[in-house]
Image (cartoon, rainbow, N blue to C red; front, side, top):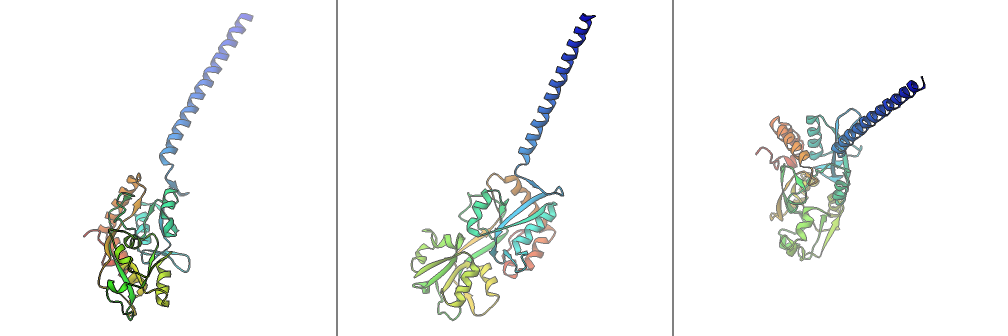
Amino acid sequence: MKKSIAVITAVTVLFSFCLGACAQINVNTQVSESTEDAEDEEDIDISESGKRVFKHGFDLDYPPYSYINEDGSMGGFDVELAQAVCDHLGWEYVAVPFNWDAKDAELNAGSCDCIWSGFTINGREDDYAWSVPYSDNTQMIMVKTDSGIKTLADLAGKTVGVQTATSAYDLLNDEEGQKELCDTFASLEVYETYTIAFNDLKAGAIDAIAIDVTSGQFLMKDSDEYGFLDEKLGSEQYAIGFRKDDTELRDTINEALEDLVEDGTYAKIGEKYPEIKDYLCLGK
């Protein structure tokens, strides 16, 4: 009888051990699978509704491409186009406005998924994973029409404004760009936004602004008090800049943009922004 009890006890212990081991194996397997899934989706935010979250990073004051309205809502061609892309893909749109000179820090920190705000490809080709270009643009000099400044040569000894971290700023500081012209200025005043620079131009604190033609047209509002010099500083194209390894996201956005061109959404949004519509290049 004692022998039978001993055998039964041993079998019970062995059976319990097997169950524990199997349970441990199952737990480990589940943890491993969960970890792999988390690693696959660690860079993708999912909303409470189960939609993928797309974080649109843009300049908080770069009209007509992106800006914050007085009521706190977001506006601009790029903002509307990004929202349309999200609607098309069934994603949740999240606006991430920032000061333009902080754009790379925001992108690298994961605060946003892209830089999409009148962002120039030219000179930055190897720095990001770029979408297809969606807008052409030109760098020009804006002046008061009664300033007496008629040519680039007339800028000698004048004070010129430019927004920090823009392609116009880079162009005026590039030996292969327009640095020779910049060296003739009395000074180059660097501003946080073009809106502030334009206010200084109106007040007479500066004599001219080096600016994208589309942004300049928006600020002038068809006023005959301001205009552009005939000579151009340079030409460029705008696209969406992603982190260099986010090629899958870039490709998805490119496909969505193509669809929005085909269904007319891209052109329809452009019609709201007369300063931009003639420069839109997708589908041409």
